Image (spheres, rainbow, N blue to C red):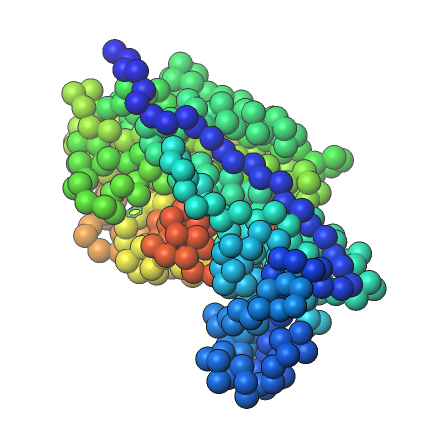
Amino acid sequence: MTHSAPYPPFTLPQRQLGLSVSDAAPSGGAVGHLVFTGEEPPAASGLDAARVAALGFAPEPGKTLVLPGAESVVVLVGAGDRANADAAVLRDAASHFARAVPGQVDLALVLPETAVPDADAAAAAVEGAALARYVHRIGAEGPEARLDSFTLVAGADRAESLSAGLARGEVLVRATKLTRDVAGLPGGMLTATRLGEVAADLGAKAGLSVELFDEDALVELGCGGLLGVNLGSVEPPMMIKLVYRPEGEPTGRLALVGKGIMYDAGGLALKPGDEVHATMKNDMTGAGAILGAMTALRDLGCTAQVTGYLMCTDNMPSGSALRMGDIIVMRGGKTVEVINTDAEGRLVMADALVLATEEPVDAIVDIATLTGACLRTFGTEIAGVMGNDAGLVDQVKASAERVDEPVWELPLAQRYRGELDSGIADLRNMGGPNAGSITAALFLNEFVGGVPWAHIDIAGTAQSGSAVKWRNKGTTGFGARLLVDLALNFRVPRGEP
Ligand code: BES
Ligand code: ZN
Ligand code: MN
């Protein structure tokens, strides 16, 4: 039975942002000036350090002071010690600037010379400003946090590298916004089928090859994990396979596997009806981050081949749903006893991990809102990472550091592997009550066949309760910039333990 949808129309806003570099502050709009510890405020403020201190400003990260200027609004933006200014400091400063003047749609930032190369500084600045201004209201009128133009003010000798950085930043902003947009769409509006349509459309525009595997195709492939989780749903499942092929011989082959649970009700292990569970529409953020990241690869000249597997379904309770105690057969033939239908992410991911190992591949990285335990351990600003290859995990850490999407490693502790033993099947889908993030990763490890693999658990970071630096309140798009950086810098792991 199908129902007429009571949902508002579905939009993915694509706003054009004017970017430029100028050697003089434009008139009109707002002009931001970074102020470092122990340094005088800029002449444009008409004030000295004592005066701005009296007005409550300190040159610390997160502090801003908005002043009326003759030609434009002047914003002092605290930036801490000049010696500590890295790309993250610049990104954060730009985000604080953008939030300090919510009514201004034309922003210009005077970009000081720091140890950060100009191209990286420019990219970080536009990321901070544009991501802070992100808004995606669905089916409602509301205050628009628009941003029409963003200008960097710097000497003409720096224009070339700054322009290149702005262009790169804009691509990363687009990737992150796409991830936020799809993750923020409610489960009823963005179904697995609909995400397949979105991926086919946007993927083709970004030069990716897109293959959609519907229910029949998944049966053919024996993807029992994705089919099993989908059993309770009236919405069909979808596996979306995206391939980016660089021009010329690839420098490496990377597979990305994303959890795409369009809405996680818990299945028959129904989640309670509290507010936290309304965020389960974002249980496809891993898949969304891969889609966002992969749409950026051609524009940024990625030389590795990248294949994305987006494992999409919702996880619903119904008379046809997977039961606790059911046994399912995964791609590759392993059997799994389903102890808890709410541990569904690992089931849908396992099929794709196996598929990824069946093609020539140098490394697999998966990304998933996998465990509440990870949210409890690291909060909403740090993701968990685990893997079977130290070199690959190091690549993930290095990318995370560069883009300020922090990760912290947990051990893939084989001592807990026994918790996944089943009396009647090859594995059970849940360990004991403790170390839930680790036992979830141990489950996934059973399906990678020894290929270098890293797992990123973004259960905590996919969503933010408030605006924090580049993060917006709501879906953060965490993972999109990390995966782009990882693909751009990918080196074939040497396979060390
Ligand atoms: N999607 C959830 C994980 C999650 C929880 C993400 C909270 C974000 C915030 C996942 O499918 C889940 O339900 N995991 C269970 C696993 C358990 C049943 C072994 C969990 O973490 O409680
Ligand atoms: Zn889930
Ligand atoms: Mn769940």
